[in-house]
Length: 165
Ligand code: FES
Image (cartoon, rainbow, N blue to C red):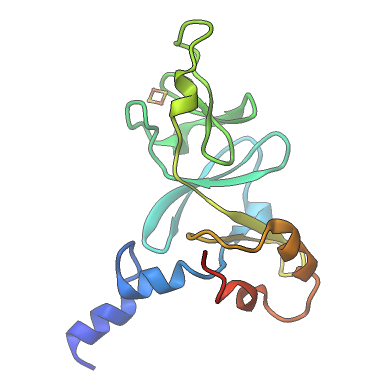
């Protein structure tokens, strides 16, 4: 194999051929028990740094690692107020990446509605070793379709393989 072919096969970052292919599939991100509900976790997934967290309601989020306000790493934030609170000025982001609180904004401000983190779809599968699965592209199957398949003995990955919207 030539080095150019090797590069094409092994680079999985955004925009690379292998990376774009892998982003069409559900892939494991973490074991569920490794995510606590008081501390976010920095993960390296498909050559991207991302922050994985579990909110007070047990929901799991996988989001870009830097706060859109001043770029602080959300890895140093904590779980509070229905999501992940940034350690610098206290903005809170839910598992979908939406900003749901900005303590420094005046009452009645809707600026938070204009702020959003890039967030990946997440699926928790008890049938597959309590793994947290992430997917980098949208899937036309809804979560309810997927949850039906969680108990199947075959791997879940196949289900969305051709389901790019
Ligand atoms: S840097 Fe995150 S809230 Fe300001």
